[in-house]
Image (cartoon, rainbow, N blue to C red; front, side, top):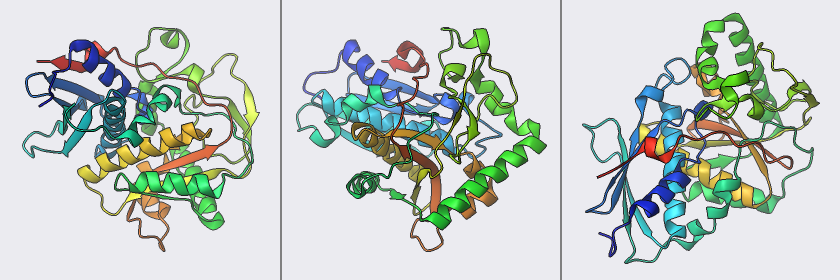
Length: 329
């Protein structure tokens, strides 16, 4: 129990930081419940924001919620609070993903606190990156960041990158043949008046990035065949720098750990001056997801493909007001 219970301002600030996390199509599938007497915060899944076509098993939903959980931990550490997390504490309550115990009687994790400035700066960038290598020391630090959260980050060899790019081309072809597969994308993208300052979730057209005129970066085009007036075109990098994030196993607690690892990697990359982009497009198909892993690797299951590089930081996407996602009792 915290020595001094958190007031509404404090807990609102922590949850606001949590909700800056990335999620599939920026659906923000999370809710929080603060129990003031015992000093805990529950992280709960909002299954009304699930995606039955894109994410039928809710793996992506758990990954996004895990990323939000990590941001909550970072913000708590920055506020001088120690955090204990219990994942999936009640098997009978499918919505309850984690219980976070906050207290100010133990030392906060200062390594987490150093990542706090990156929460506001981190955005998904769908712009071209420079064809410039990422230093080995930076790659090593990102690998270590994933390991600290119980996941793995691998930088694939050239042959593996080619395979991953081929899988992206494959899934794009499948989408063109089966337009019904795009229903989730269309539900969560905002074009025209719908994106003009009123949206609180989804991906507005200003965050689509330019239309790809050339290059080989695996950037999902959220406009599809829909026209976006004034949208520019650009040539993307020839040699995209990709990384795979995964875990040994493939259960809901693994997905939550993967989400925390993902956000730790993204925040550290942001502090290191890297732009970041995420793609799970090919991983949404079971057969392609099997092909994504390196058979020589100990990584059992791939959860996310990251694109890293030096370039524009990306455009922020809207967030739901904290009062819509936070219950205090």
